[in-house]
Image 1 (cartoon, one colour):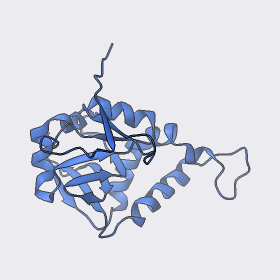
Image 2 (tube, one colour):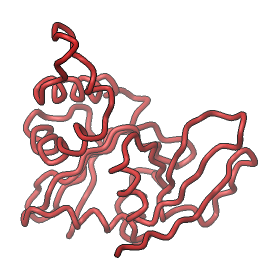
Image 3 (cartoon, helix red, strand yellow):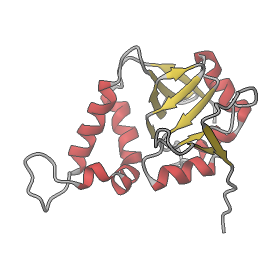
Image 4 (cartoon, helix red, strand yellow):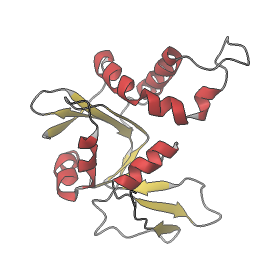
Length: 191
């Protein structure tokens, strides 16, 4: 699939609707914050889909500022939205905090596997000054996604921050690993 990226200052409701609908099952299934009662609900109720949608949109909108890169990926033939990434960029590394992925025109997300292709990912992101990417997954589904894209688990040594990150399969050839990090390589085996 041919794609292009654009930096945006606002995520339109129509693009957000497409991205949210495709991502909702993964968001809801694996995010504990939405399993607690929402404001005004009784203790035995959980967030509705509309509440989750509004809360996630508010989170995205609250980071639409100059400290964050707000990246929309579109199909270059149809101009349809394919993905949204949001996070700060430090020394060429995008720290992806929020991400949503839409289906392609055939109802598949297999196009996302292109992110494991170094040449494709570099060509997509280099014009924005992004040389590599790290993800801080908050759900088992996102961990599986990161591993399927040949991402590498990077975790701090004991005594450091508890944040675990997965780094992209591309852009790390000339990167010098900080001494306080441990890198673990995994092979994903599908049976």
